[in-house]
Every structure is written in C-alpha cells, then in structure tokens.
Length: 246
Image 1 (spheres, rainbow, N blue to C red):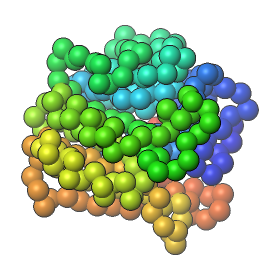
Image 2 (image 1 turned 45 degrees about the vertical axis):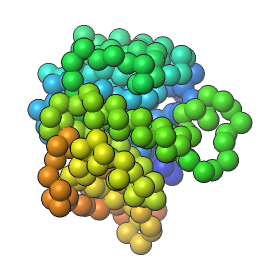
Image 3 (image 1 turned 30 degrees about the horizontal axis):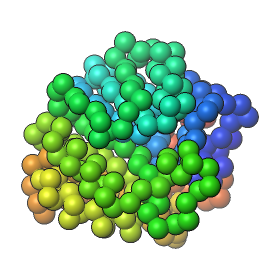
Image 4 (image 1 turned 90 degrees about the vertical axis):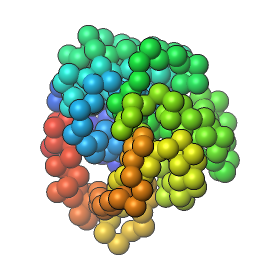
C-alpha cells in the first residue's frame, strides 16, 4: 500500500481498512484523500439515517457505518459498475445489514423518510476540460445547475436541523452559499484543507444545517503534511480509526 499526493493507492484493487475492505475494481473514481477526510471529519451527531450521494466505491458510507454504529446508510450511484462494486463492498463488510445502495441519480430517488445527514464528495470541475473517458467525466464534472438540484434535494429531504456535508474547491464553495440559503441551509462549520502549512487552501469541507442560525459559523484549518512524506498529527488522529498505516 502507498500514499501518494492526494490519492491513496494500492498495489492491487483492494484497499484494506481496519474493519472493512474496499474493492475499487471498475470504479471510475478511486479512493482519495477528499473522500476519506470528508468521512473522518464528520462530527459526532445523532445520525440515524444517512445518505451518501455519488458513493463510488462506497468508502464514505463504509467509514460512516463504522463510526455511527446504529445508523442506517443509504447510497446512490449513477455509474452501474461502480454501484455494483459498492453493493459488493457493503455486503462484504461487518455493517451489511444496515447498508443499501441504488443505481440511480439522487434526483430520481424517492426517500420514504427524511435524513439526518446527507453527505457527498461531488463532481466539481465546472469549467475545466472534460475528461475524454465518459465515466470519469461523469464522476468528476458538474455545473452550477447540478448543485442547485443537489441543494433543492437536501432542502426537501433533510430532517429539521439535519446536515448537508460537501467537500469542494474553495472557489466553488463561495459560489454555493447563495444557493444554499434559498433552501434554508445555513453554513455552520467550514474546514479548510491545506497540503502544507505554507501552501494554499485546496479544499473546503462545509457543513450546512437545515434551519440553522446565521452568523454562527465556525472555521478550522486542517494541514495534511508536517513536511514532505510525513503526515501531520491531526491527519493521523482523524484516520487512525480506519487506516492500518496509523
């Protein structure tokens, strides 16, 4: 197993965690730092019903299933091969009885009950050149109307006081605040992520609360590396419950 840049890679398609394994075969988006950080930084909340949008390999849902021992995890994935792989990863996990995945867009999902938490590592390259691989293009690229639909869905299907969590490039994060407010989703907490202490912020993990209170947002900084090849204590603390390396 190796850790390279912002991506986590293995010599095979299997990524072994402490309590479960993730087979990445046929998935257009492999396990990466964005997804595992989003899951690992999710606050301790009474989350009984969680939805992971664009689950890919299923890694975010699996990490949350480990953390929230009584929660039911639903996931949706529009790539057929990835959805099937996530299903197998769920079935092979110790949490299989409370994990479900559907090969469907969130826009075509009809939940029977509302969610305490909706979480997503969404496609967010809105202006860059599209990947010639159609499956990777779908996994990585979106436009602002996509996010309008995502926030509309969250506004309708979150419990009152429920949370929406996304990881985004900082420039896109700023564009979405007005969209969020239209659905009564108020930014409550922001984690800015830097590779090194002196490098720029490259991601923001934002938590919105349905019906939250304005002007009470808190912010924190997360630095991944202490120096080249050496992870920060905070990064290791967050991932220690999951990664064999820590």
